[in-house]
Amino acid sequence: MAEPESRQATGGHPDPLVAPHVARMVPYKPGKPVAELERELGIRNAIKLASNENPLGPSPHVAALLGEAGLRPEIYPDGSGFELRQALAAHHDVAMNQVVLGNGSNELIDLVCRTFAYGDDHLVFGKPSFVCYWLGSVASNLAYTEAPLKDDLAWDVDALLSAVTPKTKIVFVANPNNPTGAHMTRADLARLVHELPPRVVLVLDEAYVEFADADDFASAFEFRAERERLLVLRTFSKAYGLAALRVGYVVGAPELIDYLNRMRAPFNVNALAQRAALAALGDPEHVAKYVALNRVERARVGERLEALGLTVAPSQANFLLVDVRPRGFTGAQVYDALLSKGVIVRPMPPPLEGFVRITIGLETWNDRLLEVATEVCGG
Ligand code: PMP
Image (tube, rainbow, N blue to C red; front, top):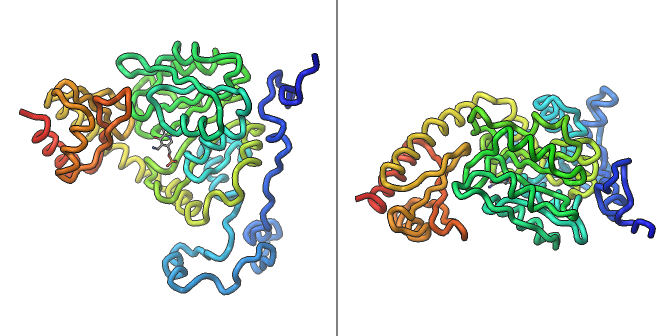
């Protein structure tokens, strides 16, 4: 029997990377940005009458707000994110066609699901892990298997591998993981990279990578040459402090990036966000300062919470997952008690009803957290 259209090979690979409707997509073509034409012609006075923009600009109230950044809110942003992608490509030593930007990495998780999986394709991710993999699967109406972590909340690569079926198309791994803070060791990551069937698009979500300092931690960048269908997901929301502006990106092979680029919404990353991300990338000292603060405070807060009789999962991220059951509480009880004293942490859904997740803050914030945690859980 002939292969159905949906299963015909693409790109010489034995397994099709995308569905026919995705293959038919072409990227949205925005009006040419003034900066792009000026770059190409070496001129400075180009005008753009291509995108039905407002020549008066917005209200002066808005202009004043954004004026300092030299932004012109009436002009569409550079839909290709040229300057930011150029800087990211240099930062990671890859080509520009190996980078695509997203409106936060949340958008990219969704985009990966929509682009690379369809019909009866199946996804695998950890349980517990970042909830947006589940949201992405459900939103795209895709089947999935949640592979359990080990009892100590470490990654279980055998569980991930054995959750893979002949239909599995995408595997999401957060490294370090949210909400546990646990990292996947270099050896385990190597097993995934090498042992997953070639058809599977392996997505390493490295939202917290900057905070990871364990000797056996490895970024998926180390393995890029060893697997064609490997995507590395990064964000400016954590270490770079730009959560409100929504900037994330994916690095991967040009073929994969090309499909993501076709499926993303035009202008998905706004101009202010692009400018801010570029500025943030240019200030590695600021990231280093936060990472250093986090390292010291993560250890201190963890020790102090342990001293209260709570169990703190080892964390390679900027938060701690704290088991409050040893003091006879549920996570919701501790959450409510801390909330009533003005400290907001996160209660966890099943199977982590006995846990709260606590972000590492400034030293003074952490002192306050420890003070109220002592009132609630101490004694
Ligand atoms: N991945 C992980 C593992 C996260 O924890 C988060 C944020 N909580 C994200 C991605 C999303 O980050 P953003 O959309 O802000 O880039």
